[in-house]
Image 1 (cartoon, rainbow, N blue to C red):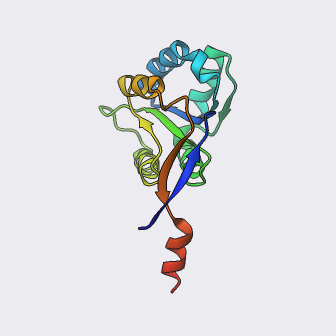
Image 2 (spheres, rainbow, N blue to C red; image 1 turned 90 degrees about the vertical axis):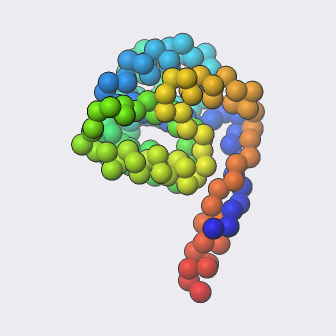
Length: 152
């Protein structure tokens, strides 16, 4: 597949997602990083978004709850270039009924080459990176070229 580029601005669009057993860890991380997160646009699946907004007083665009389609909504935003960073505290030790949606979300984040943190250590490294506060250019699939090639 051919690639093109997309510029991620200084003010990032950050998606926050957490499985039930990881919500408290994401809330603690969000409170610890409140000053940085407040400089960006936050999106989240339903329950997580409401909890983060209450804990930090930062406005959060809340989607549906993950099992009700919220993971797929975030995935759609990723594929449309509306999400720049995914912070997803997932629980690898407990199966969730919407596991296919979770895998699809992580797959889309990888396809569209956005930074992803799946645990607190990685989220800390990501948000404290010198690149986090800068405009960056990432490579993404050239979807227009992909369609042109498929329609030949």
